[in-house]
Length: 187
View 1 (cartoon, rainbow, N blue to C red):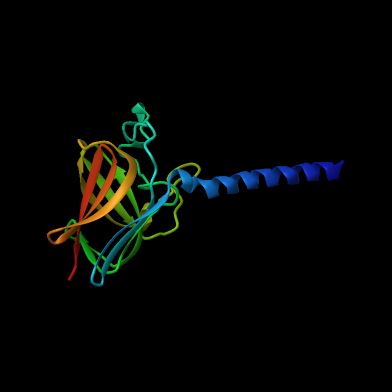
View 2 (cartoon, rainbow, N blue to C red):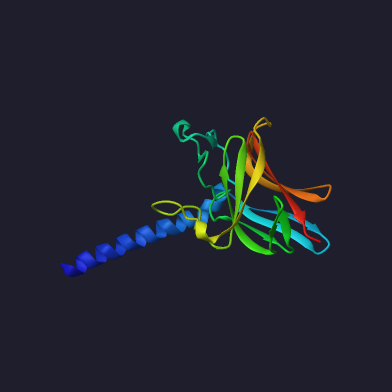
């Protein structure tokens, strides 16, 4: 009898492990990996993230509206693993110095502005049972990004790095929203 119980438990564990493995292998089919990159000489900015689709959902808004990314709450800024950004050189963000290196990046969207957060801990997954996966004690810098909410609708979340005058603008596009953070290279 004990053998049958142990065999049943073993089979159940294998089924659950197989299902979890299947989900992990196929999740990027729904939100594919992407890279945004800007390179000029020895200066490189690279953003690694995953691109979820809108699929008819309300993306930004209030919790009461059923928004996927509620205002005032931390967002991994993509899907799957947390978005990561690397800078080959020091940069200035909102008049403050951010050292060259690699950071997890998350955002806190609002209707008229976003807070972009650079966190020194790498390897976050997007969600954690029981709450927030990001450790605020590891935040290196929080900076504001300007927002426009009147653009043509974008189905798939996209990050771009666009040079303009003496800055590189990091744009976050999704739904009818574009958040923009100017990045200044330190010479």
